[in-house]
Length: 110
Image (tube, rainbow, N blue to C red; front, side, top):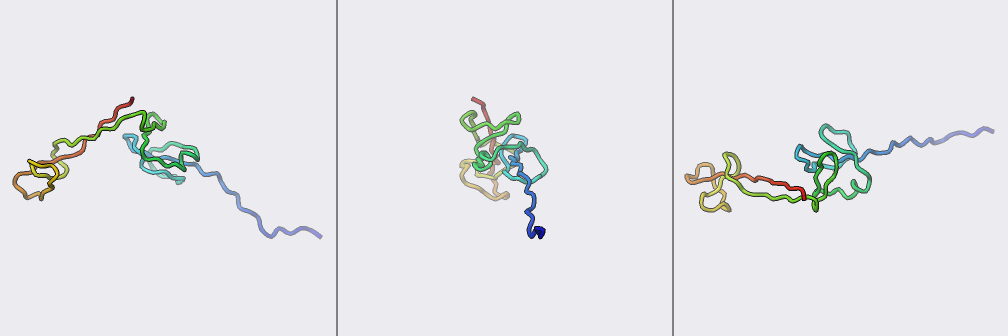
């Protein structure tokens, strides 16, 4: 009597864990999908942590303790319209006395 194969398990490919990042090195998302854009291949532990407080610099993950981020409001021609005397008061475009602000990000490696 010959053996009959009832079920054959499909082959499962090992997933490639990816960290996608923008041109500044900020994390966009973690995935196993093949998407367009900049990415680095990471290990399963880093993928499981999925930390967004890291940067990708020269193809390597740099933790926050290795760099400092300072964000500052600066006058701009684009951005949110605020009252000229108080940046916490957002006003309409039609308001007479407005000043526009945007956020400037400074990053320093320690």
